[in-house]
Image (cartoon, rainbow, N blue to C red; front, top):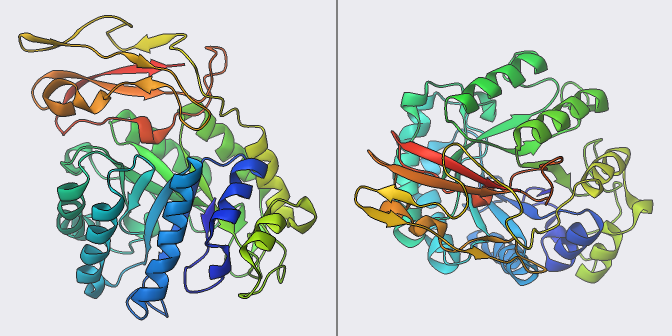
Amino acid sequence: MSLYFSQWVGQYWNQDVLVSSQNQWNSNVVRAAMAVDGGGYVNDSVSNYAKIKAVIEGAINIGMYVIVDWHITSNLSYTPQAIQFFSNISKTYGSYPHIIYEIWNEPVVTWDVIVNYANQVIPVIRANDPNNIIIVGTPDGSSGPWFPPSQRLNYNNVVYTLHIYEDVFGGVPQQQGRAQATTAMSNGIPIFVTEYGTGSVWPNETLEFGETELWYEYFDQYFISHTNWCMSDVPGTMSAIKAGSTSYNTPAAQIGAIVANSAYFTEDGIFVNQRYQNLDLTSPSAPHIVWSSQYWIGQTVDKTANPWNSTWQDGTATNYGNWNNPSQGPNNGNCTNQVCAIIMYSATSTSANPGTWDAVAQISGYYPAICQINAIY
């Protein structure tokens, strides 16, 4: 689930809400939408930074992923503040695997402008955090990475965002949007849907559950991670909690109880909650079945003359089973001009129902790359 803008409804930015999201909403990731202007970080860095620290540390405490989202559209004058912000976050929390960086929420600029911005921000993050996922916004309000694969960014573990609303999906029909997303992924451009709504925004919010169901089927088919907008009680049909259920002074524990109580859910909240409750996030305790584009479990992936392999680490109550240190594979996970492995694991333990890939487990290579994909069910 995505939280609302940090400068508004900040009472939801606490660990109690995360616990309820994890337990009653079956969520394994929270998106913290750090507002930039309009009372956000550039106007009040102290209180807004305190809010995101509370969410990050709460997520770490309970074993939840957290997307640190620089929630802005097109004001490039705040690039120095973005660099400072992500430098501080990555320096403080970059050693935790829970952290995901979303460096630009919804750019309304061309791809070349986004690339220039990313080339200023990403190196600052990578100086402190070499491996955690970085999500890059896309043109037309993050309506999708429809650029040629040769134009993708030359950094490891970078994915591209796609935001979905019934009426603002880059001006194209929803079905065409799914076709474009399929083409992008087939060209090696990974997608993370960091924000989607269950209906239309303009001129009035209306719910479109039928179209959202089609997107859910698409997410499941292509193993796309997704976060819903939004966990809040602001007026509007796409808030998960009924308007006015809390105030800024409502105690955190009480808000957590409200988030856990379906009596407070909106129509949108009921729909999204049912979807998430039906997802199987069980951690596999062993590598039951492995599919690979070339290699199988126990085989060696060659890096020139030096063999490399990895061992399985069982999952725990809060962490999925995974290969030990997959990013420390050939050339530290960089695939340029050689064969290496991209390790992925699913949230289920059967081949009949592969479930949803956990995007955080994707160890990507630099472009261009010759990579194999190992998938653990």
